[in-house]
Amino acid sequence: YPSLPFSTPVVDESDWALVEALAEGKPLWCFSDAAQAFWPERRPPAQLFSAQLNLPHNHRCKGPLADVARSFAGEPMSSESLRTALASGELTLVPCATEADIPKQLEKQVEALLRDGFAPSDIAIVSLRGQTNPGSLFHLGKLGRHTLVHADDPQMSDHIVADTFLRFKGLERPAVLVTDLRLLPAGQPNQDVRMHIALTRAQTTARVVALRDALVAVPQLALGA
Image (cartoon, rainbow, N blue to C red; front, side, top):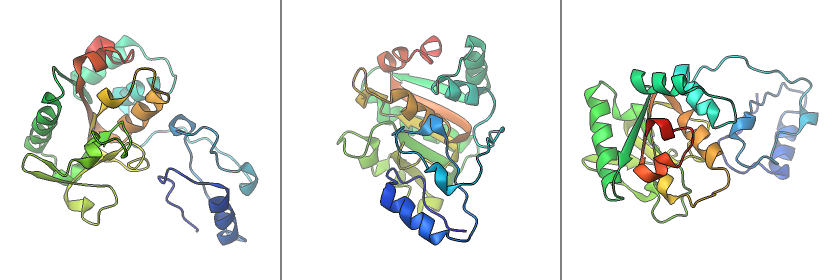
């Protein structure tokens, strides 16, 4: 079965031509999620597949946290879902007063997760900003006593991963810290897609560490901030 790293942000026509050539005469499967389409115009070419099926169950991000995540994909969410997610610990909002507080709170949340029994390899810190932004978490190699590695590092299975929402797309960890919300300009396109991708990387718990004003400005999270 041919495989392609679909977490790679760019899959253009030449890539699909290669896939088609490799799959000639063989079964070919493609899994896609329209809610995570950062570039909506880049969709798998339907002519390569003889059938399309919808998967009815979510096996990564479940429960009230999934309800909150789906609200960023345009689905309605009740305030009860947010309250339940917050009360159960599936979602935690960590408001910070200043930018200097953000790395301190990230370190504090990492230490809390480790005390709760999570291993470094269970934790990912996901930036809502791309790697080209100099202030992005992507460029932070250490967090207190912890070494941070990128998602493509050979040692990722032994360390906390710190990467962008796009580079971590398609991957998951039990605990995900979401940050760099402050780096998104007002009216940033695809902000909801970024948050949806980031939250759905979490299998057990997600914690959003951001400036208080930035959290309050997100309609889906404002009641909890």
